[in-house]
Image (cartoon, rainbow, N blue to C red):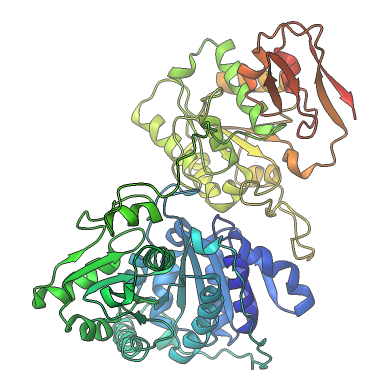
Length: 597
């Protein structure tokens, strides 16, 4: 896998500190490094959020060691403040920022293109096209980072992160590093405007040097073919184009010139200017997600009266992934699909069988009905995590899901604006630790008239069950200080606090009813471990076929995917049922029972 290759590259580069926050499609990089960290004597741990992760890695690099920090694209938004400032300071040991973008998107709220951040912050950035390049570019990035005394970013996309391929390993770096950090206020203190101007001048000079030296590096920027049609591409798109030309255009190298850009920032202008002087009949840019390369090529080709086509011009779709089928149609003019389309039934992602969040939302909706509220009248604000799936039928609970930790602030804003109905924010434990805690402090401080439901499943579930600050042992095996959510809530001044186990359904409904009747800031902590981390399960639910009337009330209310409806017969898949018993409460015929396995 590409992410495993990146981890291998970090090891070959001699990484001593690796940090990050889990987020698909980047998670497996740190998940690969963490189990190796104690054995190989380096630090690799998850951080509470991306900003903290970057700052730890940055601090380590100032001491002279090589450090890696990993995140998905929105995580760079979180880390951007210290990242931008760090570019003025530079580094001592190599510092690499792995940022995984998600064209499509597949698992991300936006198709954010992190290459613009490279230009904004002036972060030298490499983009690999294959798992082999992902490994190699990681090594290059560490070496270049130390050579130029700047952080380097490796920008990937989902198809590179999750592609599986054979990778040729290199040797592990065994160089011993001298640990030191000296006082250099002109370099590291951002309080002087004069110092800041000088550091900006320094940064610009280094960026110019990198463009001159790496722009001509044929390990990063490659040219294949000698045709008069120029295709410029990068990342996973390069393989799509290469495969298409090799499979469907005879002697394609005589018709096309294919350029792969591996140095994303600074853009290799000198390299491209020499190519453009050849005067190509057609210039096409294939990239994801925004027309970043196209933007730069238009600026370079305009004086030469050369036309550039790409996503910005509308030659390729402006949203979504660039697929081989799209390229076949738009690049080569093939109208037919090479592979027949398969009609697959739609399957929206569900909450897992036994998920405590299902019980929490059902209890909340139940309490709203009992208090005389209609679901369509009461805003329920969601957040980032598994529980965002509550937007799907049959729950259809949340109205809004925006960004990490935003639920509480948005709920507060709605109430301040004058919404008269109760406003409810729902947020997971890991998201609360990540950034929601700041919003909650604001709500406590202002005594916002909102109800906050904290869905505590004791893990970062959606990205692979990474630990939260509530844990006592990290994934690496290190013993750490536990910070339980209940203690944290009390410490910041939450006074109206109820704690419940959502599997205790009736009690949870009762608590929600009390909270709905209360004014001011109130918090309900629904605490139950994720069903997937409590295996092996000791119980399961079964359907009594003699009592079952096929009314499907259990399925329509819970939407639990453990139910199987086949040949007009309802049953439960005991392989995925954990025996939570939630469904038994909604069967009017008592046809479902929970039994020991």
